[in-house]
Image (cartoon, rainbow, N blue to C red; front, side, top):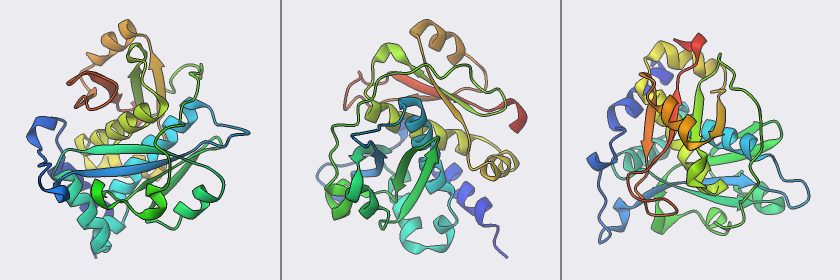
Length: 247
């Protein structure tokens, strides 16, 4: 019997590098410009906390990468492979009310964290986004920063450089990149333990000095942005560190 999680993890680990320069895309060939779309539920009347929504986004992205359908579903696997092999773009969009309900029918994974919900979809060409997802606005995801408290040392942590002043949507894409790179860099047994916890993690936005100090941690998995939006190219935007109890 196929070890589905092992196969999905092997696909991720073999095809993904933290070095974005190792991957390419060709604007003259639209099929090479790939992205994972992420829907962030931001109700007008009662929006979620920013930190909770970022944690939901990070967990949804890695859940799509390690979902069993990455092995058993041809379309799911093809979407991931096409994305892994090119620049790993992500696009965060706002959803609410009926639009949020409608996109639950588009293949992907929804994660809820303390009432905040995000859904990550199978990646694909940016020229061929599913209509229900394409209807969602890219703007309008902004939420104020909050103070969630100390990081839980028993969980993987993703730290964000608050000094970059990234929007909620930009930060959601960056923490999603960090969660998948973290999984790609860890051994299978570690990933099994994390999957058993539904990829629970903590996200914290910290000042630039604190960010730089902790980024030097030997187990830190760094994310450097291509610089298409909001930040300059090669900016270190976020990094992930494995949790104490998951070694």
